[in-house]
Image 1 (cartoon, chains in turn brown, cyan):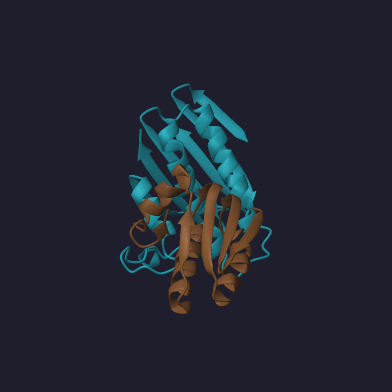
Image 2 (cartoon, helix red, strand yellow):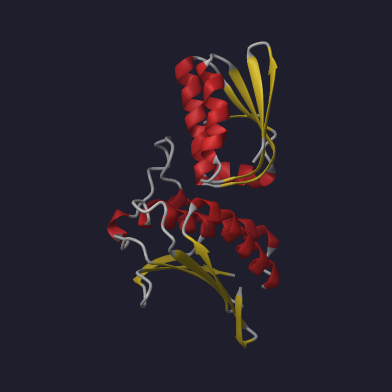
Length: 99
Length: 145
């Protein structure tokens, strides 16, 4: 998985790539969590993520909850069809901010 | 990858993997190759890959929780009878206590506890068995096609 981060004002956009599984989640957290801790709104662009398992879903939940605690917002953007299927299986489509 | 073709309507492929998180991508690749070879419906393939990867992840996370540097291997066998798919997992980790295998309440939104839920959602049956030697655990998942 590779990461790219762009900043615009108080919003950072994190572009994740590849397949997000148990082996990749720590790397994803290391990119996302410090941005939320710094008070940034975070757009998580998943357009190039074709596979996500329960570990990846846990990162989305943890990031979402962390953002709520910090008074910022996490938006999950451009979710691929295959990842959306997993998000819906976890019944999170009404919980996460999806765009 | 070992292919057993005793009966053309009963295809079976088996492969073993080192028990660690970095093997999960190899488990997925193996599964995708087999499903393509078995001509499993494309809409179903990625769901099945997810269920297999979650079960393999459970072996790494739970059966080998205290042995992150193990050199043990786990095996995955996919068998297609035409009407049913059977996916069997074999490992030599800590014996599974079936009563402790449960997912979190789905409306209690928190990280973790979803892997087993996904397996239950995707597959038709889940059976934990004692493995024949040298295996300790043998998980068998089935799905009607």
